[in-house]
Length: 443
Image (cartoon, rainbow, N blue to C red; front, side, top):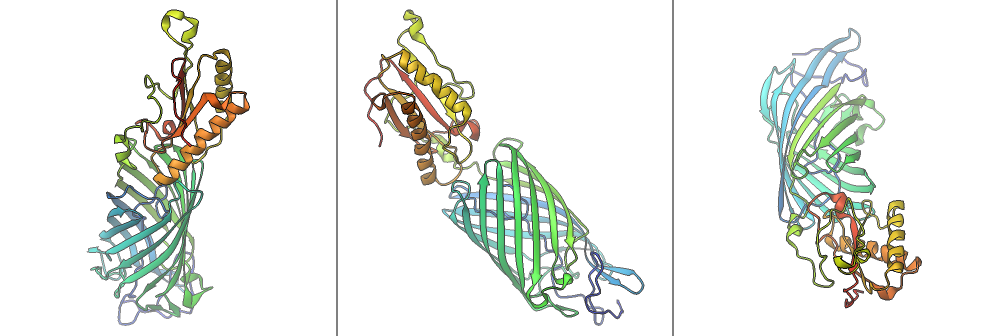
């Protein structure tokens, strides 16, 4: 039993003051950490990204939380850990159908320590989490989704690690890709059974999360998450406004499928549930994005290239310089940044060479220009993006004096990936031979 007399707002640092009656612990959940079920580049912040329709994903998130709820008597400095350390596993799974993702988060407290209730192993509040994506941010300039979460009162811990009456949350999600940088923000509201600590009504709260992820490569990156909550009934009280920051990193060891994350954070303001420190390690399986696209055969609009050439090292073959080798052949690949149809300096230099070769070889009557994207994002958007890329190449060649009668454009969106990396999939293939003269344009 803890007996003390406290003054309102008597909080210092990460210590949180509550008054306990007859030795009872507060009826609330001091564990504020809610890892995202399927975020792309952050640990905590949700985004609008869509997994392939009909696919499942799983995550196991291990975390250690230190001192999220500590009672301190300011007059003596004496501290009592209402919740001292939490060693936790979140077992999560999700299913995506079209633009709806539904997931389940089952938190298990492997070990929770408390000076009041003792050490224990317990189940947390199992939650169902749903998100409807309106615009997929991986393929559109700005993504938007709405999400909801319902927590069932399944916690078996004696410590305050569950909401006795359950909980709910509604949020709006926006995100944007800027090259390799991915930004996301969540704003919403959370409700739970009434819980009063001193003069703080902790039941209903404003919730905000912001995250940034930077892809160092296609298979590894860094992240930053910021999160805060504020009780509507105690705005301005630091005890009712916990905030936290977390730095993280992620890597895909096999390129697709397995995803490993690690992160560490601390409170950046005093508040209920804001810990002195938090460490996270996550293991996830995510289905390759639109894997079924690998089986799609190119549409028979333009002739197939004679051979597959590594797009990282494109070359122009001037067979006309050696009459015995056959007719003149030209083959090139132009690459693009993520979600962009803008020609890079390397691309324009390459197209200058193509224009010069075409001028030197008038016998090449038709040049095929074929736009592609990687398999991330909405197929309809990718189809349009591949058209923009092919049109950008065609327009540049026309500006360099290549007659429109000599070019034929087509676009396949995400339907013909290279099977290697996303960087190599974001491309326009250029090919033609002197013998190839009968091709129908695609408008």
